[in-house]
Image 1 (cartoon, helix red, strand yellow):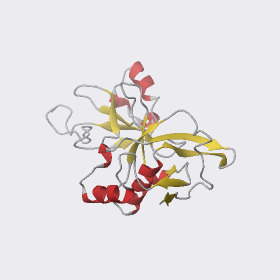
Image 2 (cartoon, one colour):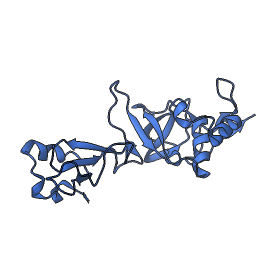
Image 3 (tube, one colour):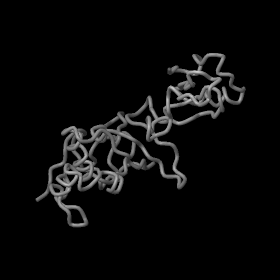
Image 4 (cartoon, helix red, strand yellow):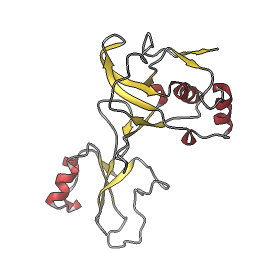
Length: 206
């Protein structure tokens, strides 16, 4: 039921000029329509209610009793992950696999500032006593680095190397697919960029 590209939308979508112009801003568009447009009580073939279908979809144009135009809101062609629609407070969030984020530090402490150890926190996450959503979001930033990653931009941890270590372990064990991180529009400070080689896991200081 989906059409990739606004040029493939059929004419019977019956969009206004303003509607078509709005659609052009999205890279992926989908149509959702009832089995019988004359019967608005029928179920839609694509339900955009996040609890019932997929939180990655948003409604581009609202047309009562007409086909709905949906979009995958965040898929990026230039960097891993998906951008989440702007928050009211201006915070920029990014949905991403932990494995797609590079550690900015070559070592991490064995405990968090609240005294909980990495091992204990991992056990709580695996058992369900603690959820990833309950932990403060890590901050990530997108840029190249003249020494560590010359000419190749990548996602780096701006803060949260210990948390990322846990999330990557959870992903490797099949307990986690994505996290939501806060996107910071600033490079990692040089004093914090201690990793020797992108892709290396930091060692845990004892």
